View 1 (spheres, rainbow, N blue to C red):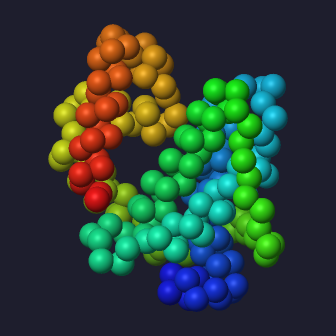
View 2 (cartoon, rainbow, N blue to C red):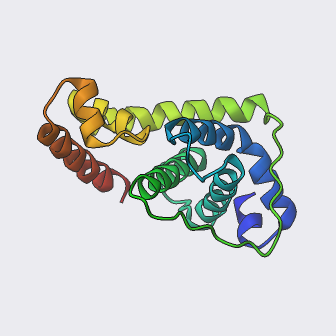
Length: 180
């Protein structure tokens, strides 16, 4: 299907969005929960950003890597949502990309076997991440990917802000070596 998406097949794009709509919905809900009530970002905008990022992930996915597309897409989407949260919390406007074709998000749940494969792939990725991170870095990773900033991470884990910042730096460095 990814090859068809790369070749511009609209049906393949729609199917990809349908398959990953549960992931998109989950990330949008999580992101909305981290936004202040006075936020000018709405769910539709976040869904559109996630759909765009999913399409970009399909275009940039490397078939030769030992990581499933589902995990790769989840990382890309989560990073996009974190970027939007950071940009919004910094007071900058979030930018949206204009699409020439309409993207329709179908909220139906995908095939259970595909969901199982995604879950297995997530476990595999989690194992790879755990293998390179210390227990503290792994805790920081989970909080960081959920949108927490180093000051919030420090408070949650009961550590100093500088310790949290250093753990974020080490975690990013180790993960970039793991995935590059």
